[in-house]
Image 1 (tube, rainbow, N blue to C red):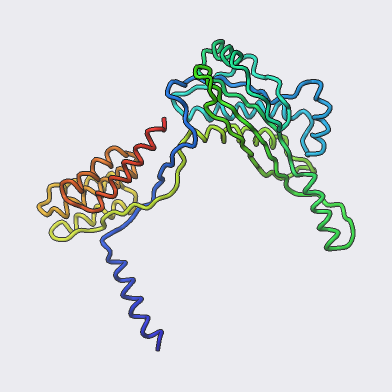
Image 2 (image 1 turned 90 degrees about the vertical axis):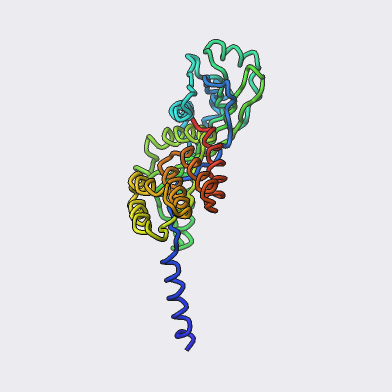
Length: 337
């Protein structure tokens, strides 16, 4: 009996949803960058200060064995990290990275953070390279869990069978730890400092990580750092009108059908013909839909103009709240190249 009572209610709810005047589209919405460059910083020199001195080399080799790192591999991989930054910074548009002839500097060679560089040295490097700032890879250290994986497999074998069997792990996780400082010689200030841990997993080959595992992880760590200065994105939903009433009903629906198959320019052309419609509600809905279409197409400023029109001239309530959303989006995009 309860099922019989609920069934008509569910059918009615579905019918109401299906007849809703609103449709929606999902699109990417930007988030503000985590860090910003000063307006006058367009050319950045970069140096690798993560290397160990010769007298510490033996201690470094011991650490390499215990952590699963290939001895001496950090020296080359840290340069791959610089290459990642060099490639990633192209996304900033009006900013370029300069790699000096003397790229490498001696640091701790471990995960221990060195003291700040002397400002006289920072100024000299920037003056020599004609740069506005100096980016320093202060720390670079890599580990892999190949030894831990082997031990874990052995323990699992003992627990399950009671005997110790030779087991070879199938995958290895490579970890690169970096610490970056961005020096501003003009203001004698640290623009940004950031520690990052990048992880990548690789299939083992003959019980060893593939040769590209560490360089690829290091390169990815360099790209990760530049992401701090770029907007991120997440998915959002935008409401738009599926229909209107009166003489424009079929034409309005035709525009929406074009939007459903991602023919947004075609949908705009249909709705544009309804902007001077005698019914204010229809014209306002057309304005709102043209605003959404333009945001989907990446035209935030144009979308904002149409959202404002939908509310200012036609009193469409969606246009008021949508205008505020687009104003915020325009402010965020103002930081992008």
